[in-house]
Length: 223
Image (tube, rainbow, N blue to C red; front, top):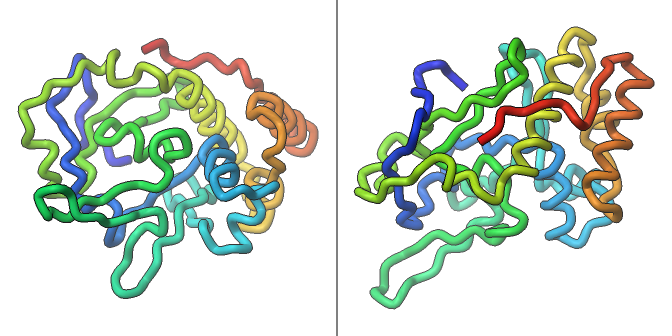
């Protein structure tokens, strides 16, 4: 994420209005390992590879880091929108946008919005930054104040899993892996076991193949 986004020191003003604007257009909903696991389970898939073959997700290259990241593949017609977006009229006949993945299977980037995560490869910590979901997000103008520590409650495991994922990308970017290699070695795994077991296997395989010396116990910043 660009450095123009300020670090959140204590808290921020935000309250989601369910406008759905962050689920349409040219948004890039980038995913990590745990997101893939949750999405595959939501869809009752046995393997994350099915997310690719059924075209729920695709890989895009981070031009700065030169790594390939999975992202949700938005539908194109009648306009660009997330395939997990559901629009419904509320009791006041106002259109509201609901996420089918909410709350248990929602990607971390969506669940934390407008809190973004910037991983520091030097300190191996995650910095939390304020990233408006859209340029004119109405929720950013709401008076509700959120303490960062309270806002992140319940996301401790997901944040740790993401930090390990970011560290894996950091260590692998020097290997010049192809799109196919990223898909096969990082983003294709079964989801029948608890994620902690899957993560341990992923790391073991990456260590053996690429000698990156990664551990699931990689330290993250306490929140």
